[in-house]
Length: 152
Image (cartoon, rainbow, N blue to C red; front, side):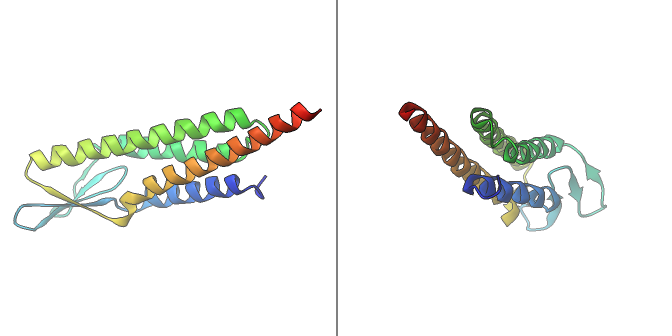
């Protein structure tokens, strides 16, 4: 199970998803350069008064779902077709994660704030790449099994 390279890709993707859940994604600044708030996956913390706004909760929900599905995909090694389907769903959900993040940044930009992302904002993209590499590894295994079935 864990000796397969695609299982390692999924494990690293799960770890990066958990890291991304716990670290801030970026900061919002006013046009004058003052920091207004910090964006996390679950909340938006105002730096002036410490108020917390839970408007980006969908980012948290998507990332928890993707991280859970990717971790579950590690244990689906005996059902390769289902494992490929789970990895495909994870990649699509991560693209949706970035679409919603872009929407949040756009809405803040229309209010006059600018967004400066942290390195953490790139971790879901790394998860997309790792899920794709795992998908290719599972597909290669499936093709190998099918070719061996033809020889019998």
